[in-house]
Length: 309
Image 1 (cartoon, rainbow, N blue to C red):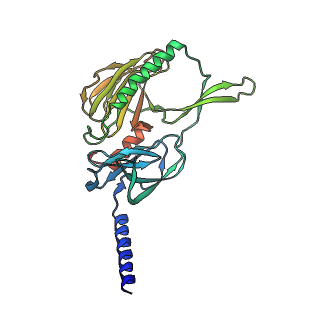
Image 2 (cartoon, rainbow, N blue to C red):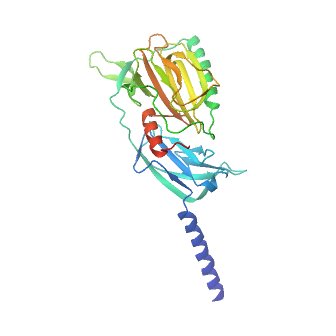
Image 3 (spheres, rainbow, N blue to C red):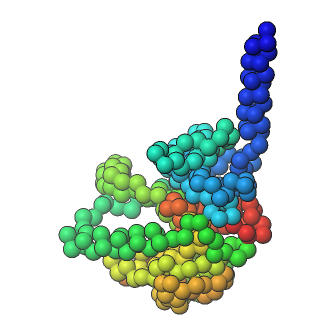
């Protein structure tokens, strides 16, 4: 009887401790009171006493770092399959890649994003070997800039702002662009490739001042001259895995390595490379994922009304 009583006491104690661990949330989501859509942003806040531990947040089959103030920013891919996904903390061990840190988890529901009406671009045009080699070199330049981003620190000061004084969208984020061949008789399109618009196009017929959407550090100010590519492209690192990108510029006012302040005029809009209609292609990358840039600003400002990431 005594042994049985001890066993019951141990079980009750174990259950009590387990439930206490579950009820004490190790993180929360700051901006989610509804399902999240493809191309949106999630803002997690990890409990203060866990920030110094060797932890990350796992969702969508990926691990995301926790910044020095306990925030985790996660972009939802534009082609993320709609459904329910668990989010939980992982601990990095010496002999294992990771283990789940505790019992607490939450479930994120992803819904379809309204990508708008697809538009037909035309056939895929083969590139010469010389152009392929140049684009490989140019991709290496961009990749080097992306890899130099500060994932744990924070450069921002308060809320994010818009890159242009007047916002007039000419092509929204996520629009499907269809590449393939159209049958002249039936007008049916045989799609060979679908590319989702990675940013938002903003009207800028004449060169307009481009403002840094928040404080940060310039990672890249480079001209990509091949037609149909980025043209003059600026990348600003805001910390915590958040990058803002500005494409098709006519002039840079900053260079790689410069610190910039929120609202600083960092460039002028343009029509580069040759053959590009004048506009600003504005992008946000969150840990490498392209998200709707205008929606990002709205969601993050709502989640963090005083900045402080």
